[in-house]
Image (cartoon, rainbow, N blue to C red; front, side):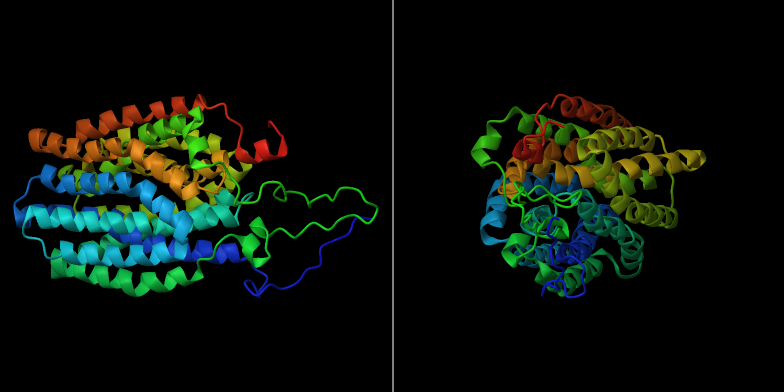
Length: 440
């Protein structure tokens, strides 16, 4: 009879809940603060700043382009530091830099200070937040990596609820005091969330996903893990070196898939609210829609993570790109006279975006392991950085020239479909399949 693992309580999970889930929950809170308030919420400030400061849409969009450039150029450095210094240290640095950047942005009168503030915000986003918690989860989970990432990214969905709150604050207090309040809130709430970050589970006598240790059979036969357990030969801190990855064609196909499949995301973050305003929707209507969209995201992300673990995260990624691209095309046509299009956009882009977030973060670890996960992701960001830099700027220029965002979003949606092609060309087996000799 095969021996069985003895069930004992662990100091990190005295209630019997695997500690990795605490990290995912804290990461969801961090994502709410950083992505919800800093990324999604920035669209709230776009029109008030443009009106108050008298700047063009292109000048403000250049701030987003600068953030993309900064994150892209420094991503290998911050990725290396994440792998070397640890997620906790970098997450704390990131929170402090984000708060400082938003405080500087509240004081801008000149374009140069706005760009400086955007640079500091970009440094904060690169150093901590989603990158720090994402790296940690890749190491604490293997089999349930999609579910954990989905739970982490429910915080992004909750962040959409910040948009109507920020809108009300901007209308009541002005955009400068609102930015200062946001900076303080991120600092006070963000630092405590970093306390839960821990390195890989093996360092604490645990296994990925909370699986129990395998006990050898007294008869001398090979031990058999319980059904569904992560392979013992593929611990979550294993993986390819950076040099090996950079010589692998699959890496560049993934870069192309990320760049083309998500080509419209940066522009959507900046111009979603301005596009809806210029299409004829009121602030109240936009706030209601975005809150509803956020509710959809919260409910979808964990479930889509489970779906990715079930059907394959690569397959989920391809589906997400198709839905997200369709949503962008529909979004280009929305107006108060065609409300049904707004609902259709919310469903297609909403489901696609939720699935894209989950699959995009996990697929690098799935193909190349987690030993240098953050550094590899950093190099990938450098390579598709030109797209993230150019697109918001081009959309801003298009609006300044034509007075509408319609054509820009239509073109971006069409281009996004090409991401499916690059994913389909990947023939490399997943990392665990290579480790166990499986070709499934």
